[in-house]
Length: 300
Length: 310
Image 1: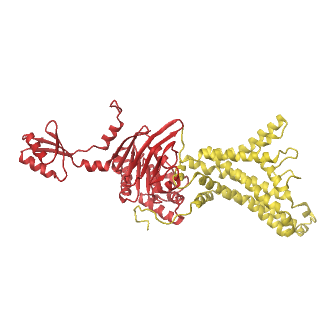
Image 2 (image 1 turned 60 degrees about the vertical axis):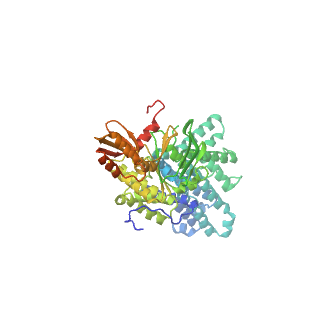
Image 3 (image 1 turned 90 degrees about the vertical axis):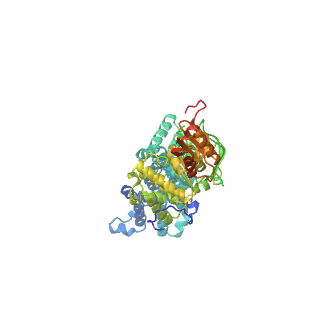
């Protein structure tokens, strides 16, 4: 019907499958995010470290580059090993934290302050789908800057070294993928939960950083006062780092973990406690979301 | 006629307070009004029907679907215009309605087409690309109506649709609602504390008071019945003989003071015949009015406390 016919008529056309409707949210959100120049620049700047790491892999396999500048044998200074891939994951995950702190607070809080949730939930659209839709915005963007470049770099190194190296070190690829997903899920849930409880966007963004650094400081105080390592349970980066360490190196770890996510040797806590700590954090975020994501807010 | 809304001992408790108290009703009208003073439970009832509140006991059905067990099917039938300012930040009007239609299951291209149509229909065609944040209150109300109808619902919930509108905007909104109602494609549930809005748009009214059903009124039947009620004021002649002649025509009469007479006309009797009788009896009919129990009378009666106070 042409738009000039001003009348109401019922809709009897086809409908989209209900499982796919949560994807409507990321489509509109990404369109909205694209309008922010700051976020667009930040997002593309996040690809600089992978570029540098790719150059590292290239020159490690091309000694002639160093020969040209008179630094024969300098390529031996670059070692492409487990630490190299942990560094890639560490750097990119840190950048993911910054990006999540900027994008996350803008996901739920505007809907709450504009009473938009009633409009979403008055439709055949559940609260779980709403959270999934909002989460998928973060998952999509954070994936693009963490495990996607990580796996591309692994493939590049595999291409340079050959099939044997690739099969021997397949653990690096799975660890990159799983490690990044753990971090993405935690970041997404945390930023959505804080966005749902703190309606003012800058405050919610600040809280995300606060939670990481203040809790880490609190944990350090407990460690110092009680002369224990259990204070690390409050340090999200430590918990994530210890799981990464296990993913990359198994039970016999020789490194201190990834940059920013380092696990100082001798201060480890049992892996199961790290997993429990993170599971508890995720559970808390889900509970916070369940309390706030409602069609109508009841003031008791 | 099949029920649009069926309430079966519906009780809703929020915290320790019982907001809706064992409501029982079967509403069949094309347009149903929920009327009541502030805090009567109108919005809570709408929110319960939408699945936002879980009944603590009893249940409700919309077009046969239980709101507890078939919440998704129920919501796929509904278009909802909330009472408060509700929109998605940072969007133009047409984008907003398109997104809402897509969430209701319309494919993107259909959603866009219907968003444009809905915007023209509610009279916002010229401003549909403007950000929602820049809309006036009246425009926001119309945009909310547009998002409620864009996906072609079977039941339209309107919660205080004329809230904050100036008289011309209110008239326009009421006309739109009447137009939607008269097309007969959907059922309309209008919640309001404004008697005029409900009277102009609805054919059945459920009056709520303190979470109870205070009265149920079929306005359509009232209107039809009230067409036969007359009040006349007469002068001259011998009233007694005039009244007995009128009664012989089948009218029920109730004489009042100063020549006023209330009449209930039988089917088939024309008012012209009354004038003929009056002329024969040399009685002047100075005033004639169709008397009816207005919604206001019904509402005030429902709001009365046992001691006669409001």
